[in-house]
Length: 166
Image 1 (cartoon, one colour):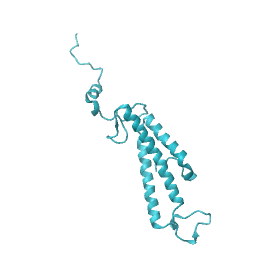
Image 2 (image 1 turned 45 degrees about the vertical axis):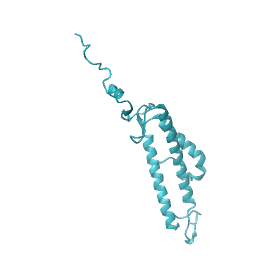
Image 3 (image 1 turned 120 degrees about the vertical axis):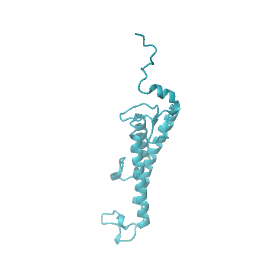
Image 4 (image 1 turned 135 degrees about the vertical axis):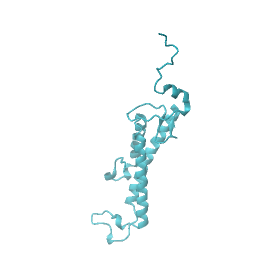
């Protein structure tokens, strides 16, 4: 029996549709680790990678975002340690030499809390970037964390080190 009049089923699964869509191809989301970059979206639909140049630029942006997170952590740590202190009953320091956050000026506490909230938002965003499950994107996040830690680790207290999601 001759089946030559039937269409080719080797592209079943959407490959023909993807080829027809071209630049309008949908994002590919992965729930398993991958090194692929074609039609990868990072967090948003508009951050859709369609070319190698776009992929390299996106990796640099992710690296800079991760580096920026380490800077925000360092500034937050410096803000906490250099906070304006109101006079307290035993001076402005505890017996162990540390300052009490309850003795800080209210504006300073509000600024500190707002900056901490920014840090939390930033860390959750980087977690979502990491959860693309793309090895190259993961390496960009780690590379930014490494570089930022190298530059700004002296400003971060030992107890607060580590890339946290909260």
